[in-house]
Image (cartoon, rainbow, N blue to C red):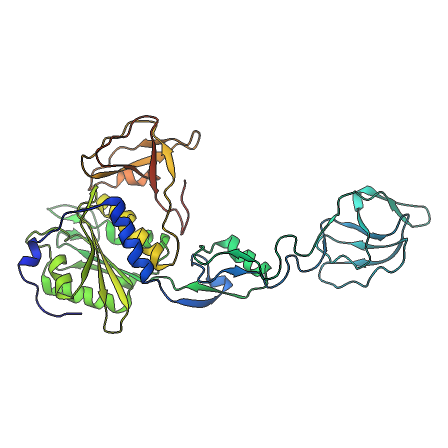
Length: 419
């Protein structure tokens, strides 16, 4: 990384903004090119990770025939003489004689030689202790390989790991999974006007992003510790450069808040220039959220790091998060580019001229439609607190009642959303 002081020209040179969809595609591509290395993790530590290799089963699934009911494993025609009992977890002896049966529990291995399993509730006992009844025509046991054959691919590389996947992997005989290392994130909060405690006043506002953004980043699969959040960073170029340099030593992604303009105390651009960063995206034609950026740096160790410059206004910062950071993190994790769900607008949504409009909406759980929420200024968080996502209104259009529009969901938990 360079250490030279940036020139004044770095403050004022601003390229035309990238289109919103183009910017998302661009940052996803650079993230995928820098996908994080694969690591082996115990199953209990893989929730929220991403598969780095396909999940295959080590055996047939199930591995052996198992009874799907409590009852009797019988051989031949009845009535049957009881010769034993089979419980789950044991390997039974074969049934070798017609007219014999063993009591069997759900999940127990079906003995070799079994011709049918008779449900216990459909059986009777004769006066001399034999078991009688009519087995159903359909087999009452699970056959080996019924769910999957040994070696079969169950999930591809790039699939997110959740509790269901962990359970599936365990049922296939895996003790560990090969997953992508989760990205390490850091957050730098810029702005001398910010308070970190107490109510706002006397020209100073409360920092809302320092406490909130780490939680958003965790929901996108990042690791970020309390010590990775620094700020407010002093509004000087040396302080910005020093804070970025320190954060980049351990983080794959450093998010910053504020300083993305070119005003007298906006030092992010010259700080990035001093560190030798290359812009992946520098400004995006989207409202709210203007301006935002993503820069790429290569450290002396050859490892790629990223800096996401988020606006200082809280809602605009979250727009930048869902627009640039979310697709970048999908690429770093080796996941597919997120596919946006669609919703039908129940109320009109204004356009923003030649910019994409990301409009906060709430999903109606009854009819599945989306309605815009109130209190959606760039500096406001009240609307965000009751929203489920952002409706995407393309440049040069407006959202009409009945229109099907893409929606950028807000994550509830890692990999989850309400859509």
